[in-house]
Length: 475
Image (cartoon, rainbow, N blue to C red; front, side):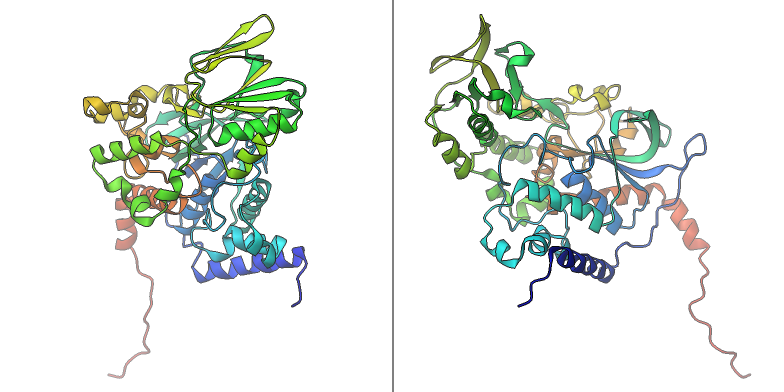
């Protein structure tokens, strides 16, 4: 069989994408009427904040629904959106290679189609997990193939409600600017509803610790003894990075007496749950979420084995809460399993949801309803962290803490970690994307249509296009 060159194979795939999209009638006819702000400038229909995995999928979904005035922005430079080649340190994705991502059911836009074009069919057959750098390269190709434009180097500073639209203050390389939009989607990733979770007991100068969500040079760990807090996936990624950089020792401190063993996303990956979790009543959604949050993501066997293959790596179970303080020039770690002295601390402690930590929501956060405002759990199931999540509507939209006081919140849609209790795990990774994005896109399209229903009726009332014009009939 003749093997195409990589460039020829990609060109053939691009042509296949074009043909499949035409077959699926993409893009549909643009149907949203133009709106203007108070100064007469045209409004964008939707601004998607975040040009990573979720943002690209949402923009593609809107394109397929004929919503044409869509702007995608991302603070990172092109090719560095999301964590894949920045803060991520695992070698491969943890999801099965067969999971579909932003393609939304278009076969030629799947990772598999790209991988076979770039690396060959046999490479796909032999592949176990997707390399994270390959995944980033795929997303860059997807962006081009799907015809999605992303404005990089642009960060959302804040959202200022105006009559009939949202004024977005943006930071760009040229300075601050404003963009008016009817709707905003916060596709801002795993920390987009809060930030890094830093345990209260970490009382160290900032230069003596790093969090797994940060970009930092692992080479700085060379020659140092390193403590790692946590035993989930990101902790072992950190440990391996430090060990391979030449750390003299790495001590992994696990809170629990047992390692996490179960990947909850594997259980959740079925249409009934992903598509219909949001249809449950509040009590069931709360209970499902609370149970899901009790699971911790285990490391991959590759990274676990790699870390412990180093003679200078130690895993300590049952450490409980870790307290860290500086004693002289040494970082002293106090745990239930004893005290440990290290030079530097790495935190694999995950992310906290706290809308007050999001600068873009400054000025409106006090109007946003949380689960605590809408639901009172049984006393033995109270969870302050879970109750702090935003209580979202069916289209991932913020809701009002006091009904009628902030109607603009219905036009701010949350497609990040903060949406899980309200909509399910359909917005915080690859697994649920195929369920979450269509639900969000249809909700946005519904909102745009209903808001313009009178305009659409006027269009219907004036419609007079001739489709039948017979010749004159004899008298």
